[in-house]
Length: 195
Image (cartoon, rainbow, N blue to C red; front, side, top):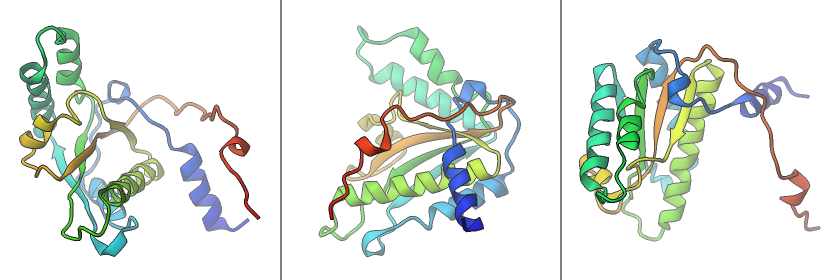
């Protein structure tokens, strides 16, 4: 088997999600985060729209983002659905993370390209980041909870109505070995060969 294919296959098969509370607080060099963003920039893109955009929080800005996220939850949630537990979770989500990146789709000016394709391209850019992080031994988590998809998050980030937040990415290091991977549905049930 080709060595490059084997290396790529290993990174894909061994990438795992590490929840931010399982990170150890050790700082990832900004240069490595920059390298991950460079990988993101090579995602497939229809019409060269390159719709992926990222807001990067590092250092003290990680806690600032978490505070803003928690406050957004507090002020935008129906009092009957609000819980102090969820507020605290959002507030402390990044306590042990080195960097947070909010990934979003910036809708381009080519209306002939469906928004779904722009979202898919941005998701591919995120996957490039996650695979690169895995290759560098950086723990990562693609979060969609809290207020990630709420219109108020777009307002907080100063995004346009047509833009779409795809998630909040947390990065750091972990002292825990990655668990073994698993798939619960056999591949043969997901594939139909038409010949």
